[in-house]
Amino acid sequence: MSEQKSTPGARDSFSSKFGVIAAAAGSAVGLGNVWRFPYIAGEGGGSAFLIICIGFVLLLGIPIAVAEFSIGRHGQANAMTSFKNIAPGTKWHLTGFLGILAAFVILSYYTTISGWTLEYMVNSFSIGEASSPMNNPNYFQDFISEPFRPILLQGIFMLLTAGIVVFGVSKGIEKASKILMPLLLLLIIVMCIRAVTLEGGMEGVKFLVKPDFSKVTGQTFLNAMGQAFFSLSLGMGVMITYGSYIQKKDNLLSSAAQIALADTVIAVLSGIMVFGSAFAFGIAPSQGPSLVFVTLPNIFKDMFMGNVFAFIFFLLLTIAALTSAISIFEAIVAYIHERFKMSRIQASALGVVLVLAVGIPITLSEGELGNLKILGRNLLDFFDFLASNIMLPLGALLITLFAGWFHGHQGFRDEITNGGTANMKIYPALEVLIRFVAPVFIVIILMAGIMQI
Ligand code: TRP
Image (cartoon, rainbow, N blue to C red; front, side):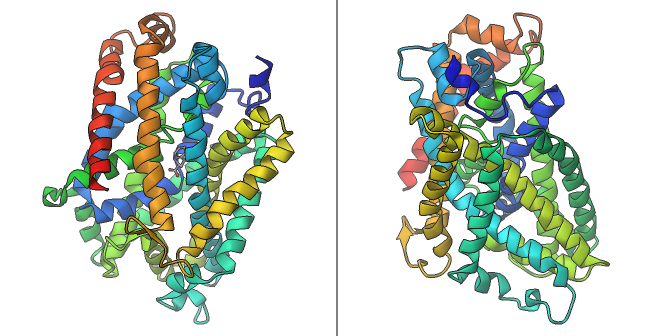
């Protein structure tokens, strides 16, 4: 048991229920909502993709979040140790190991994108001025294909993340996310209003609400499931760790539902903001990962005090990315720290080196290494695909099997219903979702995805 104390630096700092929710929402709300969702939805037919995504959040996302919380709260430790505590002598803790691998894969490209947001934050001051580098329509493409600056910024972001994780997730972070997350919401609302009032902006909203099911293929379902898992931080054990901080009297289902609601609302608002401006400026919604970086500066340029809004927006986007990156890096550091008996500082340093060893080639894949393709994708797209569409669903599958079948009917039920005092009416449905619906869906979609490769 001594092992678990040393694991997440934050263990003692999350005092209130709201603190845990804010931290979990901080993990969930990140680049996945503002950067990833709009471009994946743009490629997948807009609203049809959104509807399928929301379906997956309700049918799979919330139940799996509850399953992760229940494992963490029952095991009272980080992802790997929780499995060991509940199922000693079994191999279930390897699910936690798969999560650590996924954490590496995700963080190595997450830091690339976060580096881009830093660049935009710094440059946003000049937006609207004649001399601004952002006036160049090819600015984004030129910047990301440079060999030096994107790596520097990626390194800075990685060090920021590590700098916080080394000292544990302090009350500062908890307090900051309580203030910054609502502020992010407020700013996104302002941006949405600006986007839909642009000439032609409503076309973007139509794209997001009027379904075009002709674009839906097997790949759309795979992408939607991957997006739901990625955006809710599921399948990797982050929510297991955070679940271990949730007090015994708190309601796991309502906590999961609140986080899912916040996450979905931010994704939809991001979609409105990005598609609204994309359509107003005649930019195709299906242009891929650059979507948010190319369209947003266009709105700011014509806006009153646009540079101030741009700065605040990219600052908040960076912070949203940071609160997510912390939750991912913590999984890596906790593992190295325990498994190899290193200090947190050593573990963090090693973590930085390992993440950047994979991350730098990924950053370069937008330029120098652009010709390096795996399965027709450049490194960044491939790693994103591998993590979101293969590793997270696989992790989520193992988590549902563990929670629904291994953990045993009674243990699981007691944890979710707080010993029979909460969620009793909805519990049977939740159990069906976790034991049958979620595993079957995940297997079918995973198979379909693997066949497509
Ligand atoms: N959910 C975050 C986002 O949307 C990313 C993230 C943080 C994540 N922790 C994770 C993704 C764990 C998968 C697993 O940006």
